[in-house]
Amino acid sequence: MTFFKKYVSRSGGVCELCALESATIEFTVSPKEDQIENQVAICSTCELNLSNKEARDHWQCLSGSIWSQEPAVQALSYRILYGMKNQSWANDIMESIDMDEEIVQWGAHIYEITLAHQDAFGNVLENGDNVVLIQALKVRGTNFTASKGAVVKKIRLVSDNTSQIEGKINDQVIVILTQFVKKN
Ligand SMILES: [Zn+2]
Image 1 (tube, rainbow, N blue to C red):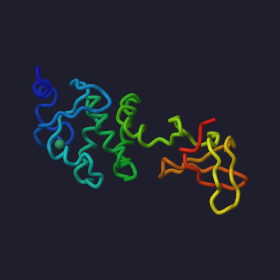
Image 2 (image 1 turned 135 degrees about the vertical axis):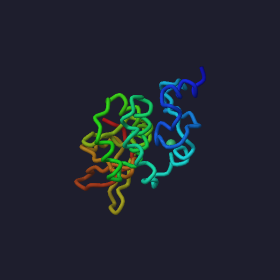
Image 3 (image 1 turned 90 degrees about the horizontal axis):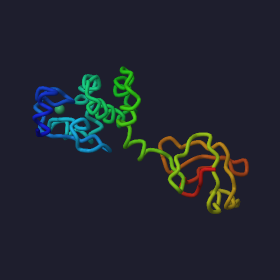
Image 4 (image 1 turned 30 degrees about the vertical axis):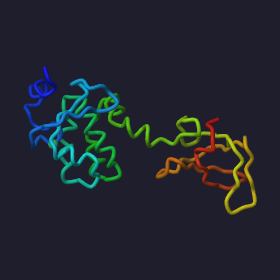
């Protein structure tokens, strides 16, 4: 059976996100494979808006789809909302449901990869970690150079920039690029 035949029996033929228009596109929720359990049938309007974080009016529909019985539909709804989570209405919808942790992880998947602070070797950094400088760094605004191998304790992640952390060197809090550190 083709995807569309199967999914029509699942959702009745309408878009599984907005439930307003006929679905014409099969959307696979990465990183999973192209199997119906991992796919969502969406309409062209939803597809057009997938990368539009300003489409608040359109994406109100996710307050319905997030309650879907289909994990793939929930994961995709969550992912779209997650991309707009700095907008309170999107956050409200995400918090309105106690979703299965596995689906949350799936939904947030691409963000976890792209939004995590990582050291020079791809290790994920967290607030409070200790790191080691992998090269000597001149501290801007001073004539002090932090030596290679220096340990920076209890770093803080710069929240809007995944390439930067803050830490104390020589009793001074400075911004350090993550590409120059290794998690200790
Ligand atoms: Zn739609």
